[in-house]
Amino acid sequence: MIKQAGSESYQVSGTKSERGPTTETGVSEGVEPEPKRELEIPMEDAALVASQTGVDIETAKEALRSSEGDLAAAILKLRQT
Image 1 (cartoon, rainbow, N blue to C red):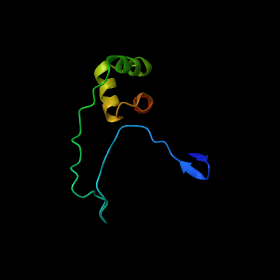
Image 2 (cartoon, rainbow, N blue to C red; image 1 turned 135 degrees about the vertical axis):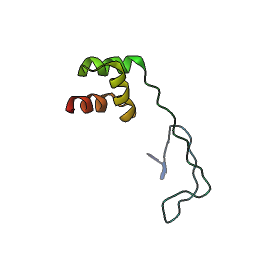
Image 3 (cartoon, rainbow, N blue to C red; image 1 turned 90 degrees about the horizontal axis):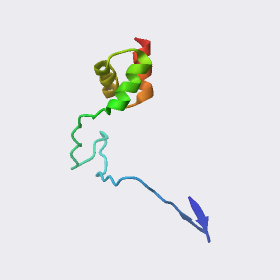
Image 4 (cartoon, one colour; image 1 turned 180 degrees about the vertical axis):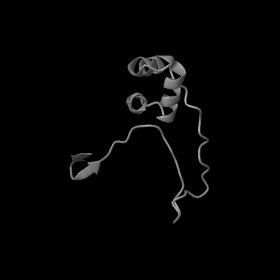
C-alpha cells in the first residue's frame, strides 16, 4: 500500500483469476471448478528427495505428488515412515 496526497494505492501482482459471487454454501455460482491436472514431477526434484530419504525414485515421485510438489513436505513425510 502506498499513501500519497491523501489517497491509498494498492498494487496487486500474479495471474488473473475470476470467479462469481459465492452462495451461502460457499460455492461460486456459474463457475465450473478447474479440472485437477496431473502434477509433473521434475526428475531433479525426485532425485533430491530420493537422495535425502534413501528411497527409490518412484517412491520419491509419489511422495512429491501427494505433497503437491513440496520438496520439504515430501522429505519429512518419507522420513517419518
